[in-house]
Length: 392
Image (tube, rainbow, N blue to C red; front, side):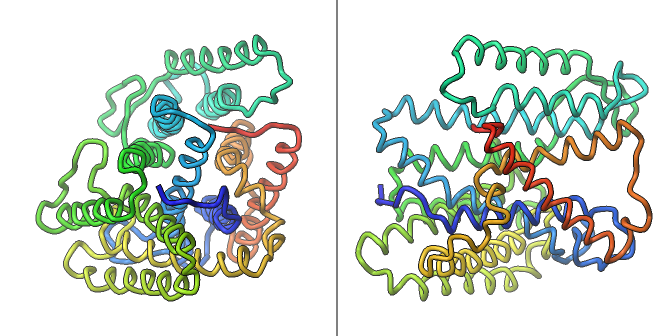
């Protein structure tokens, strides 16, 4: 495997900015009288909204980080069984959380014994109990008790769950589209196992990237709605493996002392991805996040690639480590940040509270969303100091 440094601060900062923007666009969803380009493009549109760029960027960042995490496990002396177990447990955590979140969408409040908002808050608390980064000073029996309490809570919430879809047929919890965390979980599982089995060899990783991109193109041109088990139309795994390739290219150039080629290489890859997206756009269902089209994959990968290159220069080369210190917790406790809005949104719903029209419309509404994103990250930073952060 290529020798990467233990950590790139540029990835942490890119992750922090992406998480901040995710919090912002999610909170801004529903604000009236704001420019349409800020939100998601509709499924019927051949278009790309600002919000449509955030999730694929996060998938690319998962790929950027993945080689660092696995290589660090290997350097610590973990054998194949330990590494695979690490991959499986991380994937399982994301899939479980995604599974519960996607079932929130079809929660049948009239039939269920508790309010949807209360159910959402309880499962989020359970997530913290199970996957909290407990301090080493905490007694093992206390830690196991808290984890067990979280597991039992999730089981009880699954038992009492009542769902109902458009067909009005009542049902229990069941997988749907797996949610944001679930999609990340499946893509991480496939790509991390591939990276480990292929021993991080760049040539093989590039072949995998090409294969997943080809699958995505085929599923949106030759075989509409075609999908494979685990990887679907290949879009999410293509985004993640693309990030892995970029990290591996970085390691390859650094290893050989060819860092002067870094800028030309990264710029060329980013621009080529953008060009490929616009070239294929008319031939494979246009640009669409909803349908995860090849143009969307290419263009979002290219944008993220070029922004990452900028961050390498600003943070790793120029040493501006405090450039994004105001949102740093979003890059170091990202999963915690992602879950915080579930408390914010559902506590408001529980007490039947809505934002006043004055801060739910236009520029004032957008300012509110920016402020909420910042406040949530500040809270996560305070929680970090108290060891209240999730770690999977």
